Length: 258
Image (cartoon, rainbow, N blue to C red):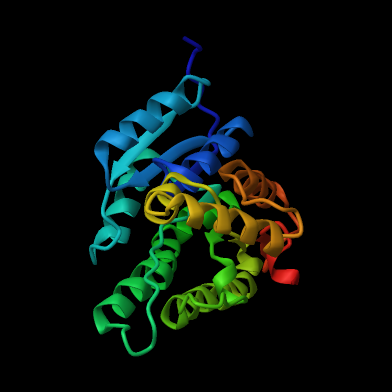
């Protein structure tokens, strides 16, 4: 077992127990950051911490449901007990409900607005002193759905939240730059995560799966879905790119250029 090290550099990653969040946490750890992972499921958090800790990374876990109104303040208090500096905050947690305008409910809209827009804003506010102290950066995980619509998948409410997150990224980059804090976002295309497998691919018949694969080859110039590592590589870049702020980085295999 490698010895743990304390680097003095901390990365806070929400939704850090699987999928994109876990991959991003791993990439930041490989670049020398110790980790504070936030997620709802304690078991998944413990598994993620063990996996990442094998590489010598110090991993702290914060079990929290970000849909709770007081979650950002409680998470910030937990982080404050560990460190007075946050070098990277990755706002990765989000949710999506796809429905036609007629079928979109107020509850669905409120849930998406809270998790996709308010939580990144509120957590950034709560951690702002620590981000300023580190001259750190915020990375918001957005989506191609802010820019590109897909025939047959109705996304008005969801796309609105992703567009809002992109605009918020630009506004915060302008506001916080003079304090030394950079703010960027990643807009992934479709990524083959455990959630994508469970909710989208698993219910498909063999014929639907074949049609899906053909559609991916047609829609993406690079001919494939993304991987979590594709997004993690981009996050590691933005975390270290000291003259990059206010960028919405499309990591989507070329999807949004067609």
